[in-house]
Amino acid sequence: MTKKAVVWIREDFRIEDNEALAIATQNHEFVSALYIYNPKNFDKKREAQKWWISKALENFNLDLKKLNITLEVQLGDELEVLSNLKKKDDVTVYWSKVYEPVSYTHLTLPTTPYV
Image (tube, rainbow, N blue to C red; front, side, top):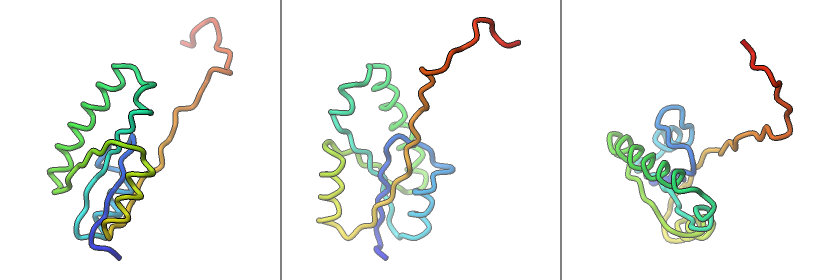
């Protein structure tokens, strides 16, 4: 097993109940978190969403520092960034599953609210 682990953070900015982060810290001497900023993904987002992500990353970084974990933000395509990381470093990469919100557009809602 490698000494260094990188936890790829996508949209899960939790410290508690973050299985990828927990496994990495239990099994590796050095752990860092990586957020990949892909401009293609952000072109589709509204300004409020971009603001929320920036604030969530700031707060997440503060929480990580308390655990002696650094947060690195890299610009680029996810596959390219992760491939380059694996090529240059002897590192194990972890990530958590992203749970996309369920679309309820197919449901017909009642006209009167439930009480």
